Length: 396
Figure 1 (cartoon, one colour):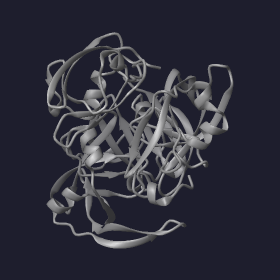
Figure 2: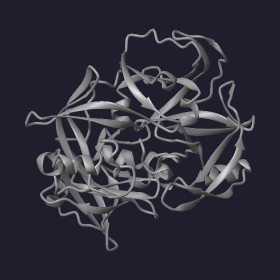
Figure 3: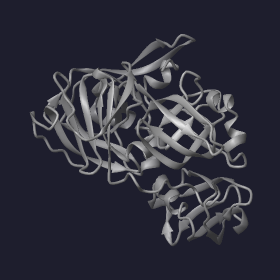
């Protein structure tokens, strides 16, 4: 996808080493457990032969990223490097020659971008030291087994897939890969587009602004009164929710799928060269094998395949507060939160008796997505405590 390189060159479980062994598809050079948190795959790695770190595996990440706190802890020093993306030069902080290992597999020295990770840590509620994607996908066949929570790197030479899964044709480059998907709208129209494969995006499917505008999707399937802000790196993007009758990858698909409709002019949801992004809320439903050298992706339905796609049932847009807890950024008209009297600026300090300072962002959103249930909120409003009860109901 010919989007701005600045965005995708930087991204959008204990350690068990088994060494090289024969696997069902060929030689496994590394086979380790991973931690699955809110759809994100977290693997353990080691740097410079000893120090252990946690990396998020992100197929939308074009270059290894190490977060600033991890770089300091590891004693790594970045230098300022000027890069060009075809529009204007910009400065990146680059750590040269990082020696990274996964299991007993030692990777060639890699240059890493040094970045802050506040948004990622707040969302997941745990420390993540960096992000990796294309540096593995270029050189290895990558298998992710969501049923067994195993992350496997295969020798790509002579690799042959022997599983029962569906093979998808993809187009891969040094930094990312795309595949074709089909959308069936409620009125019967069928749309086809090319989508970025992005395990680092915490969405089901997000449709890019030009695709949304071309087919007038905001008016046809969107909920304009609800507006969400999603972030990638330092770019905040405006989206609206909607639903499509069916979303299909090859012979596999999902009915009544919630999607996001972008209305932003910058960031990864703005380019016209792709229709959108397929995120980890879809990919976790398949045990996946990524073979970029042969431009193939293999999908086997996982234990998560038939689970529901949860959406907000409160009518609240929230954000972590610097002092702990969560602040209400928006209350949508006619929603359970609006009916209960929640106001913009309220601090949510407890949900059903649980202190929200102990919860990650995704945990709070899960509590507010329980369609048909109630949620008791304790609010801090102008230094007064206010308790409200939301009768949760799916908004779209």
